[in-house]
Image (cartoon, rainbow, N blue to C red; front, side):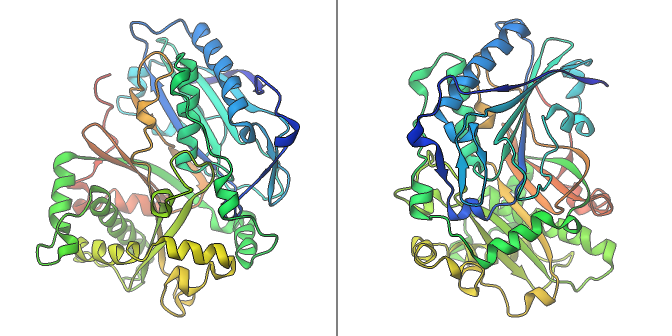
Length: 446
């Protein structure tokens, strides 16, 4: 399969950014993000009503330019630790041809080629000093006339919710539905959590960005869980004798199951069955915070909920893993965030992290879990219908290991798991895991 870049340019805002918006202040939580790109590929098959690729591309470019006028910080560049300079440098835009039929590409999805549909290497950690585009886009035209739109959003400003809002706006403008364009809130995050010039956690994040040793040779796999599998997991996680566990959510049950089996896969390779484990759930704080935050608030409004487990065995009950996670989630409150607002130095303290003493010396197996449920990437209609399928990333690359991205599907949920190559190989042999997880099935309804 050949994927050939045919065009590379920069799309600038349709109108210049006013002088009084030249400097955009980052928030405290923006400062603490790894410098990396979050990927997404949306597949739109050739069908009745889809214009010719040349017309589609012209629409996409024009509407992207107009969207960057609204989302003016995304057209800028971060020049230091606290500000983005809104200088209208624009978004990097690529076009590519794929000498393959989209239906064949998705039957089943060719994950080893998925990253080639993206405009840059996803989830690679960059140095803090690099001056990078906030958004990169690659429009891929398949031989059948279908189109895949690959986007990479820089995590410095855009978390999943912010990235979704940007793409929702772009899609609405492209299809001519300007009355549906939301008003992004660029002020609340940095007003409520202003940046600080120095914080001990800044040094830790900077070291992680610079430390090549924390990136490992990893591979990403996709596993689908149908409605029956999800119901099975929710039943296993349920405890009628515990009021708080009478109705575990789909995410809670699936996240506990994935945490367990990813941890076991790591243990198999190391041979240390007693090693402790920690799940790091990346939580959107918008609803928990309330005013002034909303789904229109731009920035990284994220909080890591860390759940420690002394050890995880093959017979560990996911009901237990759900219960200890619920206990930690229950401690998230507006009051905690207000304390951080008053004293950012408590970040990293036991008051926020709530981990056992001396945990850093025990080297627990970390598993990062994030939910993209409700972000509506599968609803993005640029004027020719909703995408047939949304992909994340695939293949082998040097990146941060032990990451799970959980998404909704029409029939259930799917998980994109990134692990070191030898660990993902162990997971793919885990028969208890495979009883409920279907490895990379074909995309339905092609």
